[in-house]
Image 1 (cartoon, rainbow, N blue to C red):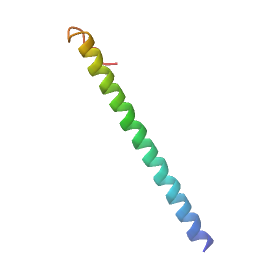
Image 2: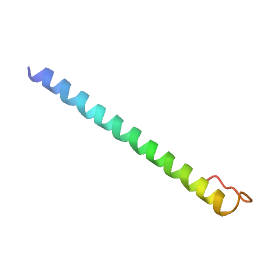
Image 3: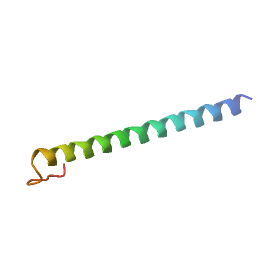
Length: 51
């Protein structure tokens, strides 16, 4: 029973880690995209930099 609980715990931690990582990546990419779009609008598309 202890072994099964241990496996379940490890699986739970792994899922939480993956979900957190995916959410962080999505938020980071969304932030960069919005920042680039805003920068492009502010410079009227004359100068576009990918940072």
